[in-house]
Image: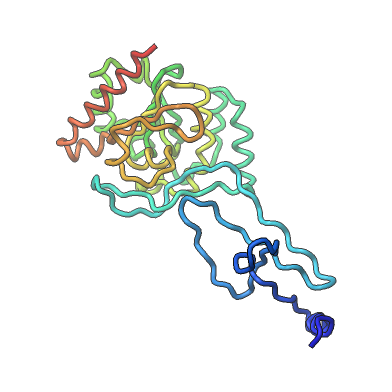
Amino acid sequence: MTPGDRKRMLDALGLVDWQPRADRMPAGAGAKRVAVAHETAHTPAEDAPPVVPEAAAPAPQETAPKPPVATTREAPAAAHATAGDDGHDTLDVMVDMPAGDAGAENAADDVSRMGWEELEAWLAGRDHRGATRPVFGIGARDADVLIVGEAPGANEDAQGVPFVGRAGKLLDRMLAAIGCSRDTNVYITNICKFRPPNNRDPNADEVAADWPVLERQIELMDPKLVVAVGRVAAQTLLASKQSLGKLRGTLHRYPRRELDVLVTYHPAFLLRSPGQKAKAWVDLKQIARRISEK
């Protein structure tokens, strides 16, 4: 069969001539990679961006397929979990905020120019996702230290203030030991601003919904140091899947700006595991040293 006969036959059947895959062609051939109809889907490596194959050339009179939708900057979020070496869970995946999500995209654009009061009022008008109220944050808004937890619990949801109850009181005592206070030189907030149902870990959608607010809080504060309190806060801020035990003990760089992040234990974990308080004291002394730097 001549090439012309083959083409006429395929056109009559409404089929597209198959092309060899670029990764199987000789070097320098310059062949264009195309999608293969029955090829098994491939999961990309964790550190590599997903490869989107180009669409096959359409048959005559067909409309060319639309290009794949691009994604905006990464918005980390918690998802499924597995056991970590510190007795807590570790996140399995981090997700991107899709550009096609107009609500998230518009939210990011809106809050990027807001001041503190406007930002807090804007959050109060958002979907509470079943929570009683938003928990925006508390403390000195010009502080050098920003403390970030994962999400409000039942006490925080009732009072609208982060880190209350037994864990909050322990955190206050820990900060007081290094001359810090939420009333004078520390600001405290969470990754998520609304309590997840049943005090579960926040999911990807919840993190993505509240992420622009946290980013704007960081921009407005411009702190010297962010202290990630607990596993979920640490993994989300650092876009990492390492356990808290592996992340704490050293300074990390916040991926989205020139800012140091220190990871430490959540006070609720220290209440359950008082033997870890010595390690927490080491972390506190590092915070005190950073504050004293000019």
